[in-house]
Amino acid sequence: MLKPEAEDGQMTLADPQFRADVLAGLERRPRAIPARWFYDHRGSQLFEQITDLPEYYPTRTETALLHELCPELCALVGEGRAVVEFGSGSSTKTPVLLRCVAPSAYVPIDISGEFLRQSASDLSQAFPGLPVMPFEGDFTRPLNLPAAIAETPKLGFFPGSTIGNLIPHAAIDLLRAMRASLGLGAMLLIGMDRIKDPAVLVPAYDDAQGVTAAFNRNLLERINRELDGTIPVDAFVHKAVWNDDRARIEMHLAATRDVAFTVDGRDFAIAAGETIHTENSHKYGARDARILLRAGGWTPVKEWTDAEGRFAVILAEAQAERPAP
Image (cartoon, rainbow, N blue to C red; front, side, top):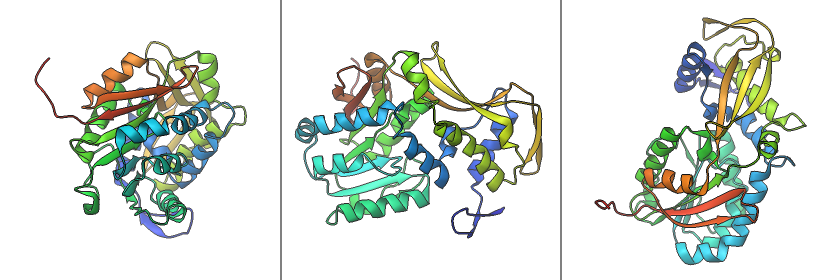
């Protein structure tokens, strides 16, 4: 199936995995579509707007932490590693890290190719002496990174608590995939959001300006555009709730009326009040975070948090496996 790209009108093949995930997600009960499909070009733009919202504390908190931890991080990591950023987006936090650790190369990985290339171009201009090697792909699977850094020690960078978007077993799988991609002896700098009062958490995912709502509904617009969808986008509202039992914020698209539509030629119907589950954002206590990392093959080395304990940045290492204990 050929679909026009929104930005330049060029014809391109619709992503077969996107089609498969959407169709499977709409057929299952409860309905759910993986959050990674938020990030087409428009979705990436909207997410960058979210990070600047007054309610959205993670970006401000993590950026401040990166500035504070830089001297200690540099001593622990050393200079000359290749920095590999998973899900780089616009790389707003990346310059802080690059100035801190003086890497030999920078490899941003993202599923949104157009956004990735623009971000890589911006960073190349900001760091003219640094080799920047953008890599378009799904980092949830082991990747063959550029041959130019094959023998170079690596520092993975996974900021923003994106790990929280995955249910625990999938998060462990991702951490193992990162270890496989980066190799033994690599290090990983990862952000994790802490459990806190829902009065702080919920507004961060349901802002007063409605940017997060637009971000959520953009998924339906993408389905309509790329998969011949006829979903009435105005029939769905954004919903963000705290699930205390699973320690996570959940984002849903809730139908305000009975709707019938098609996607890729298949018929679907959703009743009023029914939802499509579009994202989780798990929050981790300090011990939970360390257990998660160890289960994924990473040994925690150092942890930094803000004064209020809202957010953590953790450095971990892919050490050689050893028999128990």
